[in-house]
Image (cartoon, rainbow, N blue to C red; front, side, top):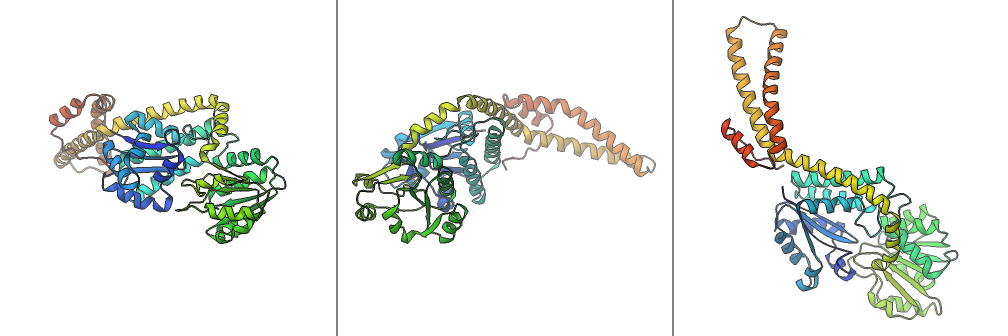
Length: 417
């Protein structure tokens, strides 16, 4: 069974490349339809730090998809891609699900994002049995790692690290006003972390007023519509942007105008959205300090060093789950032959039992059930050895399954779903 992974992540590409490859939740359906033009089955995992395509085809299909999806020259993104096949691809996916490949080791969000990726692909009809089991196994592995190790104990997230960065930039958070642009999960985590660190005031802005109001209410903050954030920009100390938006929400003109209304008061902007919400050129303005998600790396590295022991424990769980999946793959490979053999044996059993019953005196229901059970038991015991041998060895030598099919003249059906 073959798996192919083609991806771009925070270790191989800067944010200006990743944001062009990123696929938001509302565009995932269209992306999967585009992928369908190149491959029968595939799952796309797209987070703030990675976009990865998992298929059972050659990597050329994924590259063709990326060429269709991206509006940039191939030379600008091809150098940042990586390719993994079979066991390496599977192991990487398990590590992603376990939070070992995240910028913030042990973070929870990626596990939910992986589930959403599988759900979207299922909805689009882009998942066959091997891909479904692969992702289900990865998600199970990620849950085991978090339950059986302390890798996520007091877990950080990109959102909480953003608040740490803000605190370093401004000093004390008490008395400061924080504007959170985006009321999704990342926005919730930002606001929660800021509240726990003693921020003076929280303002939440969202394109959906109801979501901004709901989040603000849970944390004692103030909601504001996206069209009216300029007044808050005039007075706030920190802005954290994490909105899922198709275009820049804060451009140079908007921020420059805000700075004229706050002479002498610096503004810290932390943009953790991918694609970015703040135009990079904003960093050129006087008294404006702009950070993006890649600027969190130094804090993330310290977090990684603290969790090295738990990462080793996680690696052992991943190894066990890889072996479990490999065993399933072995059984899947020979399952059509096993199914055909059992059907052939059952047909013969029923034919012979029917002939025998016709020659015997009328039997009671209990006697017929006993005879039925006995013949089933005989067939099961005869087939048990060959079937187990086939499961243990058929994956390494396809001749075993082929020979069995010829010996018993089996009608073997294709089993992909």
